[in-house]
Length: 396
Image (cartoon, rainbow, N blue to C red; front, side, top):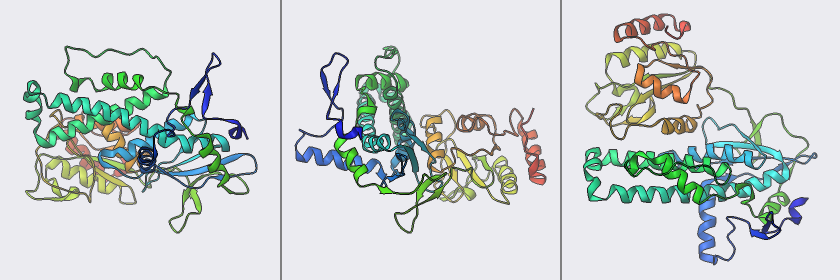
């Protein structure tokens, strides 16, 4: 195998050698141990399964983390796999899990390199977040951040870092030396998340497909479990043990129906399915229940919290779209991944304009029966859909 001949240095075009990126030798035992712990916290890989034709499969699990980081890492891993020549598919419906398949050596390189690349992207994103935090603490910016309130400041900081991580992964996946837009001195830093992250990402650019340790990748192959032939569907760990069971990325049973929150709420904490008392919400809920009577998923879309399962308990709040701390489209996409619904094919948005625009960024193919209708016609359409839920069509 070629891995036997690969060293810890890479030849440059001029014949000189360059050390492989993100290797941990020479750091000292304490720093190397911290680096290893961080890598393990990002992703856990099953033993590789090898077939007689040189192929391999592996399952990757991404621990859930605050602010949707687990979902963001899983989505990044799906894209990073392509840089290694590997297919990664199927975020598990109940767990953040991917299955990766490809040439055995490519899969081994990817499994060893992925946590190194994720760690690098996380460190760069944290750099961006620290600069944002420094900006937020400056007295001259207090008028903006004081107006957000404590929860708004936290939400804005999370959104800024989430954008930074996504953009940095984009940059690392692209060519070195891409054309960058410069930071605009006339605009505050909190309005330039993508530009800031692009600059930092380019500064920290590395050839991610070389960010693996050949010795560790060879060890993964040496410890692999053989099997007779590649299965036709993606593998997922059986909860009863470490054997791999079949999994196929299929849409959720029944439609995914999104309904709006409402300004009117109970005066105490309650499940999202009970908290909101506004008329449009209640009518949308009834229509959604009819549409999912034979199976499906109902989500409440909140300007502050994003997608809420009906059973999620939350405190009453007062927040509208456009206010500081509103959920972003990137955060909504990450939530959809975390819920295992990002690939849903049958999606219905029983929502008014602002809600529909945000949810459609996650599912562009979604049906939008209330689109462009006034409140009176929205209520009429919901009543009709409740009586005949099979008539979910986009409003003219």
